[in-house]
Image (cartoon, rainbow, N blue to C red; front, side, top):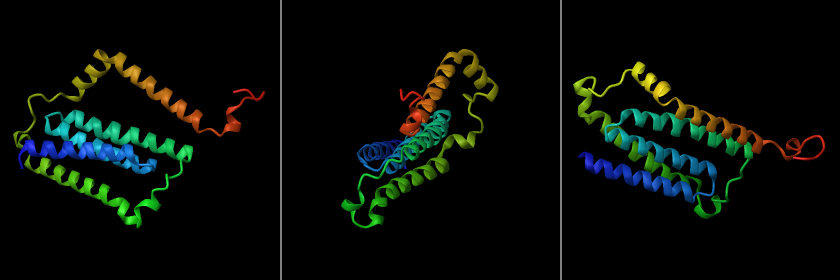
Length: 175
């Protein structure tokens, strides 16, 4: 399978999964489709020769941020949007996600088994963990701090939004 064909297949998976994520009424289903989209993007980055960005995509977006989304959904106790009436049997809802996951699995196996760079050993653009840490915390320290503050503000906001209304108000009844 050529790299161009795999690129278009992964691009189609990413677009379809994203469209399914934004059209679902059930927030948990939307998050599952979004995780599929992030995995397709990670494979695209890997295919384009950026394995570190692919790893970040999986670790940060598909891992940490999706866990945060699921945590917020559970904290807010969002009810499903009534999709069970439209689709009929329960198993029919899982067909699109199973098809997308199967296609992603096949692309992953093809990429890892047919990758020509794995036979060459360490690529010449390899950065050691020391070089990476130096670049991240010396050259880009301000960006790292800004992102860490954004994540802190998001966590505090999620905590405040998830509190029951009676606990949000102060002693005098004021917010």
